[in-house]
Image (cartoon, rainbow, N blue to C red):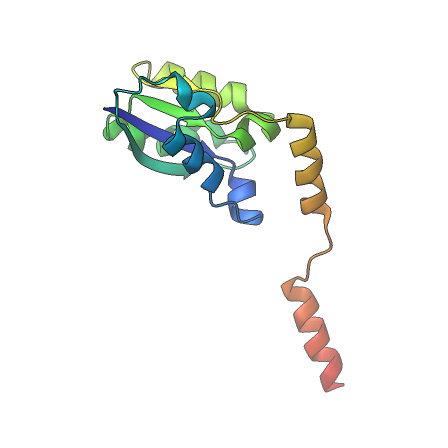
Length: 146
């Protein structure tokens, strides 16, 4: 049985509400990067974590703290989600620090295939879409009182 962990983009999960359903579907159906596992081998999803967010001073230490949970559960492989491989400018550094700290874990850069540029444009559009904020709600409420 292969024990699998998945790392997703914090921005996409926290800001855009991605629930990793495409990643899970590919794993269940052994599509994308999961096609390389033996069909005789069961795949056990140990967990899904977000990255540590776009780097700050401690981002690379933070990703290792998160990945330690996977190491403690003895995962065989960690897959970076498509969103990580398509939009993360720090993915190579994350991969490097994980490989150095946990050489026993195979790091796989991907889950499913897709057009990264199209995905990047889609994500940019979602992030730049006009959203109602808490400030908008407070402003509206204050204006109604005056």
